[in-house]
Image 1 (cartoon, rainbow, N blue to C red):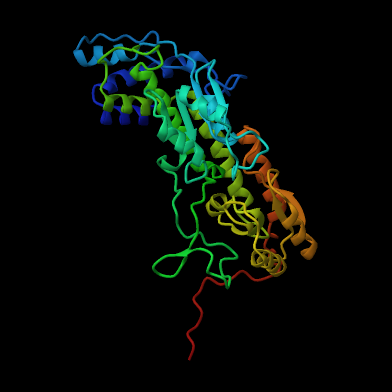
Image 2: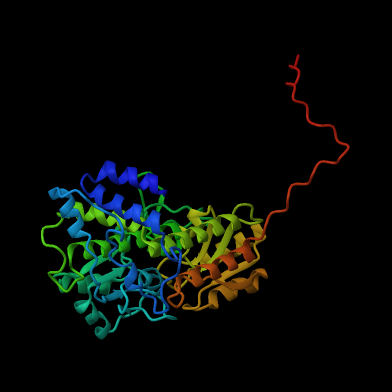
Length: 410
């Protein structure tokens, strides 16, 4: 977004706040932003110099109207206190941690190397949510202990972000067509009024880079609202009465549009998206076989078909699922079966023995570094999908195709 576009958007949508944000934007344009695309500090938390941006130095404001004074007082920079944050799974840690104030701590409920399905979170880790300033989890039934604990132990001042409810996230129960949906046994799951298969909600939304971007925006907006409301200045900080709730929301949205760390995260996610598009643009194969049905949203985004040996809950595979996987591998000449580090590989190895396909890894969770996780997954997809052969060029002596319409048939 250009400075001119953001200036027009602010002036049109935020009234008196436009004066404040135009001043900020003018200051950035005049002085520049050092390392605007720089990564977060080594600790993973944001630098305090990037927090709570206010009116840029050297920008003169001569008006003394109440509206301008109100906007200027609300934009006064103030130090952010470190936050205590709890996230449910490792990929969320990699998306949330760079946005936090320096010195913040992130408690991870699911340790790396453990499956998200069926894991019992220790009481001591659940207790950390009672002291947290912010809790981020996925939803869609994936973390029932988290939802139960939050509902039972409501805490004033604690903010909760549920990935399922983030704007732009398509995580709903709906039919998810897959390569092996045309099976004979339809008794094991629900159907809609038209008789179509209705599968469970797929909670693995973080594996779609664009839905991950929606989460980044939501967390950044939440943190900006905390700053503007004074919650991060030690309780009653900020300027009481400086802005009402609607103005705080508008100001927070404008802030994250020009926050270098948010911009950096968005750009890195966009790079992942474009890389996935390139890998899936002209693949030799468009079907993947996975040991666990965790990659439906990724596949849907990039127009791939999925054959899952085990379902969304990673339960014991049914014999018909194994037969389907073997049939599809043979019919489509697939080369690869994907397993996960957190789950048993026995069923996938059995299918590999029957078909001659090789075993490779797609990891839905990783160790907390989201971008390392997704780039490794894209590497594996590129190996399995291959690239379609380029169209054969016409011989040099071949006549050029006629541009005249074909003669009408008699």
